[in-house]
Image (cartoon, rainbow, N blue to C red; front, side):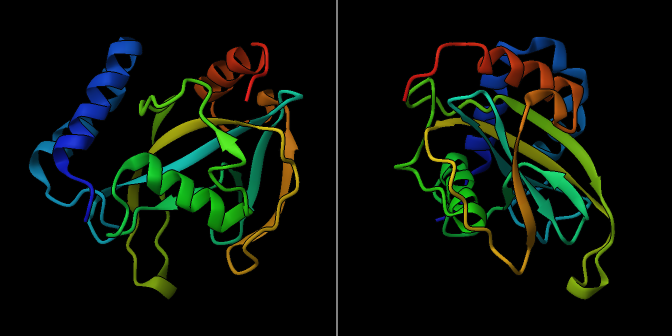
Length: 188
């Protein structure tokens, strides 16, 4: 069962209810959701949806991984699979695959809320090895808290991992959102 366009639209609406000032940044995504079926598929171009996990530990640090294909430090995450039944499940699957942290070790600070903490649209360079042209990712970023800092990375895709302060994250908007969360009392 794949993720429906209706779920994607509803997630964007919930997100914009919380962050209405980001509406302008998401217009290309909103148009794509209306005009392109299977936006969750990695074969949908020029844009498709991905999911990432912002995992915050009890010290307020965030897990980042060194992505070998992009040669960048990023949140654990990746492409949606046809078997993923919703966006959060896709995010948790990617987190488990890339870091060995599973849903019993990482919990959402807001319970069953399925609204991402951030949606970021960014360019991805062409990857001739995978026959992928240059394209855009609309990355739905979900936040989780954990007491578990031991990570086993997926060697084929990940070169290393680190627990970093929120200020070291790759976008200012994400830094602000995670810093605010990291300053809140830790509860799992």
